[in-house]
Image (spheres, helix red, strand yellow):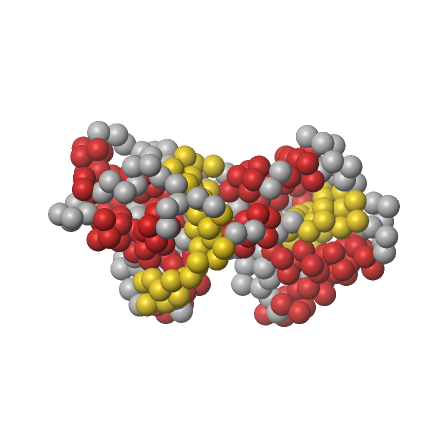
Length: 353
């Protein structure tokens, strides 16, 4: 009997990690009815981060009303595990909360993420893990900081906030960009959030000014640390103001769920994402899975809705690289959830043996 681990990232806008895993598992069982299939929902800090921890570790989902990126009231959730909270910033400050025509990082705020932090602290959480991904904002975390000040500061400034002194923050992201400059949050990520060419430069200048003022006030400067540019500069706010640790999202999750133990006696790992290319090898989730599995000499198959740079992916160590979509499939068809599930199942049936 073969043991196969299935750990596929979400196909953004199409399937969750759990849905993709289930489709792949059905393909395995179609081909090998006696196989032992272990499904592991995964996320690198973006979509599905909270659910991945909930699936692996249990815990209580806390729901509350917060402000979305345009300061409208919405319901959002985070996870509590004992004295640890897991916050996925996209739940309160995510791009998917906005219609395309509403996207404007000049005004979008991370205030709702701050409200999630405040609620977790008030519940007594002493460790807060924050998944940074899928944000609609490019406000350097100023909105988040304002929500914390509004809740805890008697005189309305950061120096009055003492409730966070005993709270340890860890940010989880696959983004290593600094806050400012050509590789910073505004230039690299703001256009996909709706920023025009002129707004990108305005956002970058605004971030630089805020970082310089913060460094003068606090006596340290975190703007160039890896991860500072994550989530429109939310990474910077956590590093600068909360003294957060920064971890690769997938490494943090794999450590937490003891993925090394799951790999014992495994014959194959199947991972994947919506689109795979050379950027997959730059710290994205499937590459983290591959690196972990290679330490145990377990082959890793990679599937995706789109494949480019196949030879580079194979050279990096993936045993198989498979596009789930037949050639010529229109994008609008490929993104239909039922179509994607069936294509994953058929791909797995074809490539496993």
